[in-house]
Every structure is written in C-alpha cells, then in structure tokens.
Length: 400
Ligand code: ACO
Image 1 (cartoon, rainbow, N blue to C red):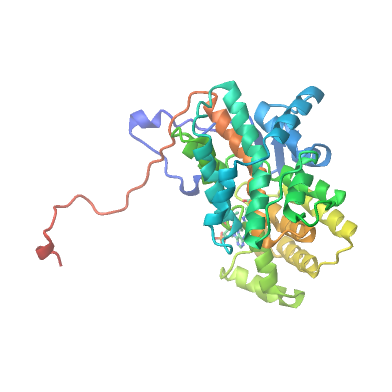
Image 2: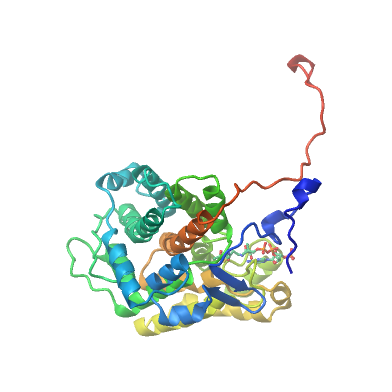
C-alpha cells in the first residue's frame, strides 16, 4: 500500500528513511518488480521470456519506447544503432591519459563523462529527435568504449567496430580480435550467452545507479554526464561491482574444503557473501535463475569443468539450507552466476562491472528520458540533523 506524503511539506513534516527502504521518489512505467514473488517485468514482459526469446537490442527498444518493436521498427532501430558505433578520433586520444593499470571502470567513467564535451549542443531532451539520438549514441558507443577500455589496459591496438555483426558479436570481436587476426570468429554459443547477459542486466527500476542517474538528471545536467554518474554508482561492490567481488571471493575461499570455515566468518559478520542478498527480492532473483541455466549451457558447450562452479554450488546449497541465511532471505542474486559465465567466455574479472554498465545504459537512458518527458522536480532529500545546537562563535585564542 502507498502513502502519498507530498502534503507533508506544507504541514512541516518529512520522512526519515535511511537507504530509501520505503520511499518511491518517482512514478515509472518501465519496469515492475514483485520482490515477494521473485517477478521482474520490463514493459509487462517477464524477464525469463525476454532472455529466452528476445535480442538485447529489442529489449532496449522496449525500455525506451514502451513496447517491443515490430519488424519495421526493429530494422530501423538496429540500423541506427549500427550507424553510431564509432567514436570521435579525439575521444580515442582520451584513453592515453590513463595509466595502463587503471581499472577499466575508471576509464569508462572518464571517457563516458567526456562524451558530454562532444555532444554538449544536444541538451534538449524534450525534443523527440534529440531524445532518440542521445539514446542511440549511448547504446551504440558503449560496447566500443568498453572494448577500448580493455584493449588499452592490455596494451593492444583498438579494434574498429564490425557493423555487419550483431551487437553482442561485435562487442566480443572488439574485445578479442587483433589486427593480426581480423578473421577472428566469435563462437555463436558465446554470442547468445553474452546477449542474454546484456538482457538480464538491462534495467532494474530504481536501483542505486538508476536513482543516481535520475537524481543527477533532475538538475538538468548533460545526459552523457548523467550516465557517467550512473557508472560511478554501479561500480561499488554492494551494487554492480559485486560480480567482480564474487570471483575474488571464490579465489579467496580457494577450495570446497574451506567453504564451511568461510561461512562461519560470514555469520560472524566479518565478511559478506558476495552475490547474495537483495534489497527487493526476498524470495529469489528471477535473473539469477536464467543466469544459472545460461551458466550450465555455456560451461557444457565449452566443455569446461570449472572447480569454481563446484565451489559456488556448495555456497549456494549452504545458503539455501542454513537457518542464518534462510532467516535473512539471502538468495543468490544476478551477480552470483554472471561472473562464472563471463570467466568461461574469457572476459577478465576487471571487465565484469564494465559489461554490467554497458548493458544497464539502456535502462539508465530510458529512465532519464522518461523523467524528462513530463514535469519533474529537482531531487533534494532532507536530513535528520544530529549535530550541535546553535552556539556563539569562539575566537581562536579562546578555543580549548
Ligand atoms: N552476506 C552476508 N550477510 C548479508 C548479506 C550478504 N551478502 N546481505 C545481507 N546480509 C545480512 C545483513 O548482515 C543483515 O543481517 P542482520 O539482520 O543480522 O543485521 C541482513 O542480512 C539484512 O541485510 P541488509 O544490509 O539490511 O540488506 P540490504 O537490503 O540493505 O542490502 C545488499 C542488500 C546491499 C544487496 C546486500 O545483500 C549485499 O551487500 N549483498 C552482497 C553484495 C551483492 O551481491 N550486491 C549485488 C546486489 S544485486 C545488484 O546490484 C545487481
């Protein structure tokens, strides 16, 4: 049930809600989550159906436009996305300012933020054409910028986008092809898995990064800079950075023999079980279910018998049976399995959150444009002041 507290302001009240556990600052038509049922719908379509039957770009279209595209709309949208995959030559020079050992997320923050310097004339997000080109540019350029961030840290030349390839295939090509191997063929099983991973990360209503994008955009800031703000918020290990942290945790545990001892540390609250728990899902994360199936498919197709998977299964089993975890509704979330698939595809751990950012860009820009399509207020929370009461100034020589 919803209580509308908008009249509180005139009555001199405000609500205190750390972590926004029970506060909805917006109305939105994009994504619906029922945390108790473990249900996630984009524009009404269940996530498992989208992951199984739709391509990521069709999901992007639905997030942006309200429904899946018909055949003509799909062709037109795909064509536009292909036309904008390149980045300005001067943007390429931006990468050289970073150290080679920079985290690719740090590079993404800088380079995506820099897009605001290239497209600063395109700020009227109430104009239909400008709304469209902003979304297209971001969705098109993200795989290019993400792959460039990786190539730069590897010290390898950038690969130009292949616009005759699908969205996911082009991304994997730019990641793994080299000038000496431009005939590099991407395994179709991996292309499908990558596309599914993009779909499963496309949007998730008012999570920390999307709320950051909305809050930043509520000031009227440049939309590309707002997306950079979203990337920053995503980076933290409590949010998108969890996929990288899961693999680090599995490395730290090492072998199945050490799992029990690790779980005791979790119970003593010395460490968190990364990839478990969710603010909204208190039954199961429907994305994790699809991700687990995809994980089995990919590992099966590649003939990989990863001991990390065995380790992950043991963690999952204990968490689902042990009273400590059951009582706190700690189920695997989307990030628990995605790392294992990404590792099998050959993606280095430092790129996991970058891939999340690439995929979530469609959600971020959809929310930003939704906000700008109707009158909105600047986001400005209040606080519960716990500091000193009013007191008189003391000269420095009189201070104790
Ligand atoms: N490991 C161990 N204990 C946990 C975990 C965890 N991952 N998550 C929550 N708990 C415990 C808390 O210690 C707390 O226990 P208590 O009641 O004894 O004090 C209880 O469960 C409730 O936890 P909260 O912190 O209130 O839950 P909240 O909704 O604020 O946190 C969050 C959600 C941030 C996702 C948390 O579960 C977490 O940090 N998980 C690990 C990081 C992770 O996987 N993040 C990805 C989330 S999905 C995404 O962003 C795509």
